[in-house]
Length: 107
Length: 118
Image (cartoon, rainbow over all chains, first blue to last red; front, side):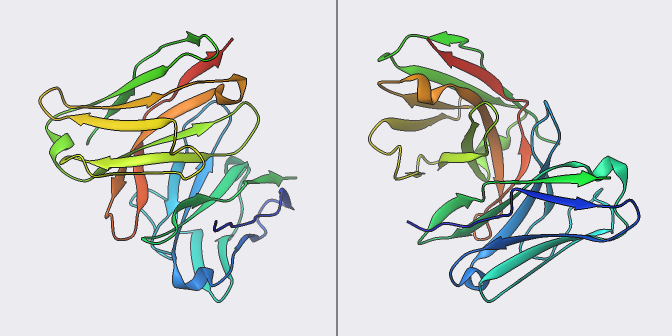
């Protein structure tokens, strides 16, 4: 079965860029979405269709997907961005797969 | 804006069947796809399955033998049944709306309901 992997944790200083990777075989051929989850809350969609940002999501959130990896980048990371982030991959043959999640710490 | 609300079964006995319902506001049940996702305590998200308004469903292969998702458009609800539950099925269960099936992403989520198998 298809799998995607994420680093368990990423640390970043306030104001600096943060990157979270999601790796999987030929991931660039699938569609990737990213979700932010804060403690006790439901996940929130922050990037879909690899690069698109839902309305209401700050411009500092961006995504890319190519080859065997997708990346969520947060430019100018703020304290409020501290959360768990999950990538989700999809195509009609592999159905829906979530990464294990990355805890983003803003130090 | 569509809103989702999961039912609250609370405690389920081992080996019994877990049943959950997600109520969809308005008449949105007749569009889009709908999905169930769960999150065991302290762990990541696990996709369970999806269904559309006409009843077309697909499931996570790891759960396929135990799970059934159904839809009742007259009630504006879709439901999850998970049989033969064990402690490993203890989790927060979320229902969510799938936007653009071709790209498959969840843009609206319920608040989640905690299910304990014990």
